[in-house]
Image (tube, rainbow, N blue to C red; front, side, top):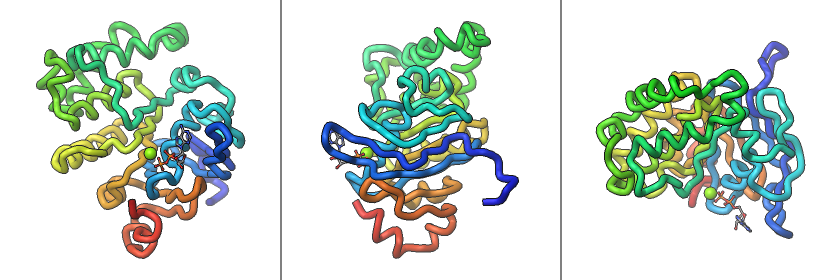
Length: 252
Ligand SMILES: Nc1ncnc2c1ncn2[C@@H]1O[C@H](COP(=O)(O)OP(=O)(O)O)[C@@H](O)[C@H]1O
Ligand SMILES: [Mg+2]
């Protein structure tokens, strides 16, 4: 790193996390700079989901340092992190099946009101229609289905809705946990193009992904997690050229 490099948007330093007596994260460190797509890969049980949950404050016991936009957030509750501009899309998409696509999107902006509305109105009523319009441009499948009940859509489309809903709050950074899991390949490719569009629009992305090939194509940098710690990190292009490392750490 050079002396002039700007401070990272998200810095995780020596993070430790526990579920009850199980010590899961063993001193994990990573950073994400503004505007990057950074991907975490690693086999099942490596600690990737626990890492995202810890960054979001959803793991009960954690130690270390997590800094977001220069603020130490380790001891902040999840909703404060959200209001600071961190959004999290968990593996299990929590869309509301009986509501329409548009109603689900509106829920995303409702969640963003409160704090933010009083701190400069980032999510004013006027913004709402504009955001739905902008998001519909990025997610054409949702645009065609705005009035349709979410439950009528395929798994991949529901996952896109979960991601689009997170974007309604105009987050600075989104944490995405295995968004392509169980989704038809054609939709996965479309989804990855959407990540690139999100990046272009200024959203920083921390992605957990089993689909290493595709992830490497769109990522700036990659971290491999194993045994609750980072065992390798490099620019995506470097890992792309190293099938041996991929085979060692990324096999499911
Ligand atoms: N709620 C939980 N309670 C206890 N152990 C858990 C819980 N969630 C995950 N674990 C354990 O933590 C380890 C890391 O899990 P996880 O972060 O989900 O891995 P990954 O997302 O890389 O597959 C695994 O050994 C898993 O069994
Ligand atoms: Mg996981």
